Structure formats: C-alpha cells, structure tokens
Amino acid sequence: NQLLRVANPAGSLYAFRYINAGKIRNTGIELTLEGTPFMNENFRWKTAVNMSMNRNKVVSLHKDYKSFRYGSEGFSMAYDMWVKEGGKLGDIYGNGFERDENGKIKINETGNPIKVTGNNTLLGNANPDALLGWSNTFTYKGFTLYFLIDARIGGDVMSLTQAHLDAMGVSKESGESRDRGYVEYEGIQFKDVSNFYGTVGGRNGISEYYMYDATNVRLRELTLGYSFPETLLAKTKFIKGLDLTLVARNLFFLYKDAPFDPDATLSVGNTLQGVDVFGMPTTRNIGFNVKFTF
Picture 1 (cartoon, one colour):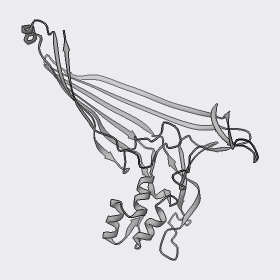
Picture 2 (cartoon, rainbow, N blue to C red; picture 1 turned 180 degrees about the vertical axis):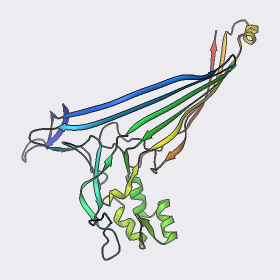
Picture 3 (spheres, rainbow, N blue to C red; picture 1 turned 45 degrees about the horizontal axis):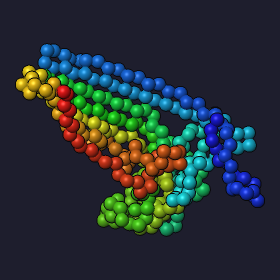
Picture 4 (tube, helix red, strand yellow; picture 1 turned 45 degrees about the vertical axis):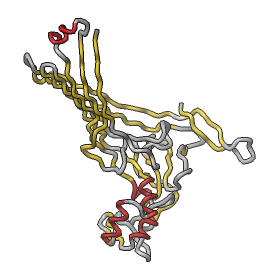
C-alpha cells in the first residue's frame, strides 16, 4: 500500500488526511559482467560492467480516487506530480504548447505560442530507462589506476531555474537570443524575444519548453595510487606498508543535455523528482590519501 494524501470534506478540522491505498508493480533486471582481459607478471587489467533497468506501473489506487496529486505548487504553477491508475510513479505534468492536428505549435496574433493551461499535459517521467557503470583497474608493479564511468540513459527533467532566469532576461540563453534577434524552437522563429520568454518562462509559463533529456555520461571517479615495495620499507624496521593515492570524484560530463546535473535532487521525497528549483550545483572533489601499515 502507498501512503496517499486526500482532501477532507469542507468544515472538517483538518484539510487533509492520509490513507493507505494503491498497488504499484515494479519489474526490472540487474546484470554485472566482470573479467580480466589481460594479465602478465607485471601488468593486470580488470574491468566490470553493471547495468540495471526498472519499470513501474500504477496498477490501482483507491475505489474512490483514480489519481492523486503529490507535488507542490509552492514555487511553480507550471507543473504537477500526479500518480494515476495506468500511469507511472514519477510522471511529470505541466503546461504544454497548444498544437494543431499535425503537431505544430499554434501562434496567437502577437506571434507568441499559445499555452495549454491546467497542468494536464504529460511531459515526461523522471525515472531513467537504464543505469550503466563501467569500471577499470590497471595495475603495473606498484602503481594502480582506477576509473569509473557512469551513465544514466533516458528519463526527463525540468528546470524551473532556467524558466525563471529566462523570464527575467538574465540567462545566457535569453541573452544570446536577444543578440541573435529571435528564438528558434521546433523550426519556428519567434522574433519578439522578450515576449516569448515572458510567455514560456516564469512560475506559470509553458513548462514543456523546459523539459530536458536526463541522459548523461560522466567520469564518476578516478584514482591513481602507488604502493611502496616491502623491500624498501623493510629498512624502516617498523613500517610494513605505505600506500599513496590521489582520488578525484565527479570530475566532468562526457555528455549532458540538461542545464543542470540530472542526478541532483532537492528532496529525497517524490515531490521534486526530476525538477530543478535553484538547487546547489554538484561539486567536484579531489583528495589525497596516505595509508600506513605497522
């Protein structure tokens, strides 16, 4: 059962109550392959690949409720997080572009896109299609080089940070559009840059415009270490082992579509899954380890 919030009748002491209801089905796989492609007396290469996939489906909720809203509109009125029967946990709803029968964006008399309000448009899902990891360890005599590449494939994210910066005209993208004299989106050129961003950006804009592919590939970890030989340490009489290691984590992206780190989150709950709201940027860490064995 899921813990879901529902509204109480008017006149009740409390506005909401929580009920246990619903059934969510999760199916997935996880695979790990590892091996040693090359090894001799002085050199060894070990590698491992890990892949995981998960799919969820909301099978049922409650006999009286076929959908529940669990998002918050405290910061934005342009998106909602809904769980609906037949849908998926992590579905993101919001305001979309009004389109004709051919899927082309409709434009009003001022040349701006027309908005579909009400946060009823399914814009995407925050969950990735797959997670991949590839690690390699190279050992040569006393030296060890290790690196880990992580990949998140699929999923969707929304940047409300970008929406607000665009609306205020202080983002890099809005500045470049002003210099260029237009905004181009889906093959359409919008000449009035200020009005365009005023329409799509802000707290109640067209959130479809601020959806991004969450796919990203990064160098997650890199280490370089050296272990001093025992023959050298034997001269000290009391040190049996000495290891020096340079460690770096979250170094850089090899590929990223979103204007923020898609792995960053403002909450461990479901409310802000896949939504960036002026979050702190992720950090790159570099350190040095010294290990003595006595």
